[in-house]
Image (cartoon, rainbow, N blue to C red; front, side):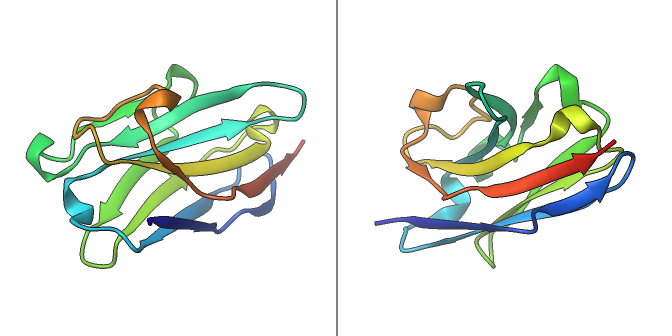
Length: 128
């Protein structure tokens, strides 16, 4: 059973930066799995933020349009951690951020149903 634990959330001013981490445990070949970041703002549905494919995809990345140029997803397969570097944060980035792991897909997939393990979430609050 895979477990995912996010960390790195917090309160930051508009224009600031944060780096989220998501550590995986209990799984198999971590390097082969697609990993994603999603977020859910208060009163809204969960939305895709970024994803990075497994080794066979060459670590391809995909981003939601609203974070392109500001957020970067990366992974350390040896440590079994996926990161989300968030720069130039905006008030509208305030949300609970979740990491997810897909055992069935190797590319940078964007749909929630393509992921079968989820973390508990970490709160990111951007003050205006």
